[in-house]
Image (cartoon, rainbow, N blue to C red; front, side):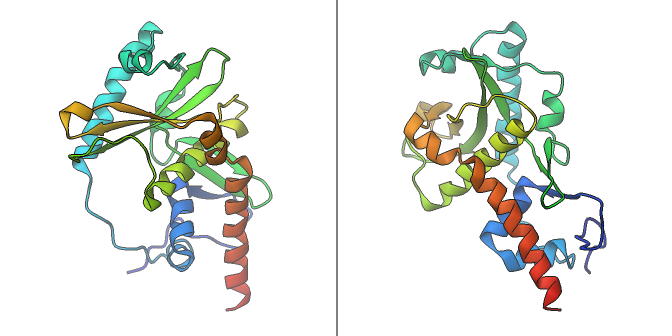
Length: 224
């Protein structure tokens, strides 16, 4: 049965709330996005990632211990990252689904939200977006170069855009803390080099994506 809540209403003047995962759905399947946000017909949910959620909670707890001390985590020191975990009164809200970091995209009247895993602060006072990932592979993970990894990079871009919209200085470099089920590779930090990071950190890319969402919804209404 179609749901009746959180549906896009083209006649409403109230900002329409759209999450980072909603933007990713639009990228993957615009038709699925329209069915979900306009008609209330969602795609079947996938399997729950209980292990990933547990690793996420453990990593947050560990980095939070160093955040309270205003000290870098040993993994950061080992990777040569000149930064410390960022402390802010709103960090827990920014990490929470359905609230997260929020910014209104005024041209489309869409309120974009995204829940970050972590934020670090470098010596220049810039925020570094950090995302936790976990898997179980025999091979060591040294780069994110598979086709489906592009979604990880779009995820980072949205978080960077949201933070900039909230007035923060944000580094174009992002990090993934990737925990592998292979103990030899657990907790390996993957760094995007500055050249690569500049390609990932496309502030215009996500703004354009939001505008495409609004245009598609309006076009679909005209064709009814």
